[in-house]
Length: 186
Image (cartoon, rainbow, N blue to C red; front, side, top):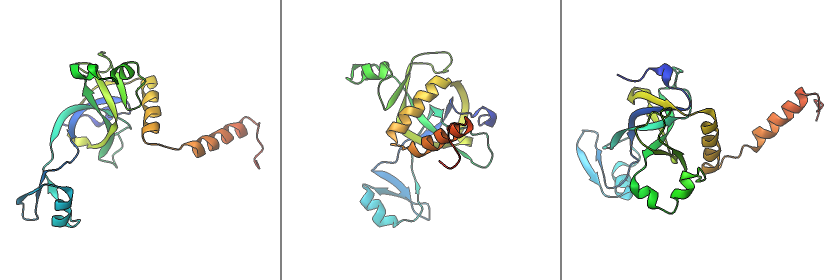
């Protein structure tokens, strides 16, 4: 049974069927349902020429962080970030000290904590952004607090190279106007 939609809130750590990114070689299925191998993206493009195609994709039941509320009915998908458990070999890499200290731009460290609802120490990957269909979400295990979500926001802004200067300038002017420190014509 899919998760209760009312639990699909920003900052929730959900468990769901999370697809792996497509890679080659892959198996695709023609319009008649027959399987065909494609050893490369070039081979696939030549064979399908832009037609919609069913492909064989690997999925895994895994945790991921919800980035927006999924309670509204008009959208069947929610956006999230993949969460990986920390393996012993991760801690031997030169980047581990930065991850552990919450200084790495691409990873957010989740130490073992009841509030996260994860069975082991984990990391959120800022580069593993994906959509999940609400029907593929099994449940919600925990949540991140507002400080953690603010740190995720800042890292995502950097990873995605978002330029928010216009929005910040407009919001600043609005605040100054409301405070009576800026005339309407400025």
